[in-house]
Image (cartoon, rainbow, N blue to C red):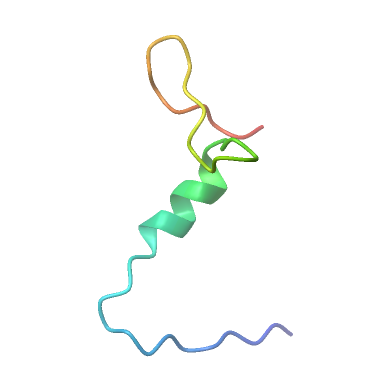
Length: 44
């Protein structure tokens, strides 16, 4: 069973972690990889 730690900050932004997991990012710069229409590419 996994144990999760409680984050003390009440103003935490969890959407940044979700965005990182959903969209492809450049390995070196950490920026999102965009398609031809300038939309972020989803991970496969």
